[in-house]
Amino acid sequence: MLKMGVPPPAIKLKMTSENVNPDLLDTPDAPAPPGGPPAATGAPEESDDSLSDREQSSSSDDSSAGFSD
Image (tube, rainbow, N blue to C red):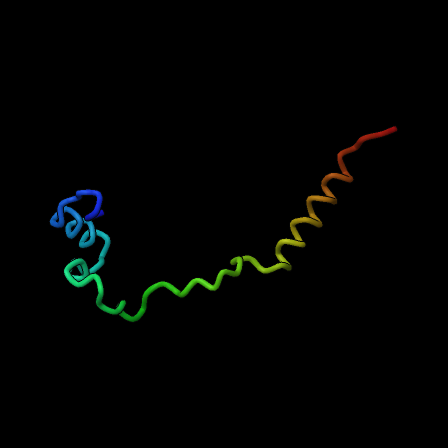
C-alpha cells in the first residue's frame, strides 16, 4: 500500500481497526509475531474423500433425472 502512495497514517489507522499492531509498519523486516496464520502447505483444504462423496452424489442425481427411452 505504501508503494501505491497510500499515506502511512491511513494504513496505520486501518491496521488498528483490524486489530493489527500498527507499529509493524515501521519495522517491515522484523520477524513475524507468533500466532499468525498457518503456513501454506500447497495441499487443498478438502480431503479427497469429501470430493469423491460429492462426485458420487452428483452421479446418482444424474441417474434419477427420469429420462425414458
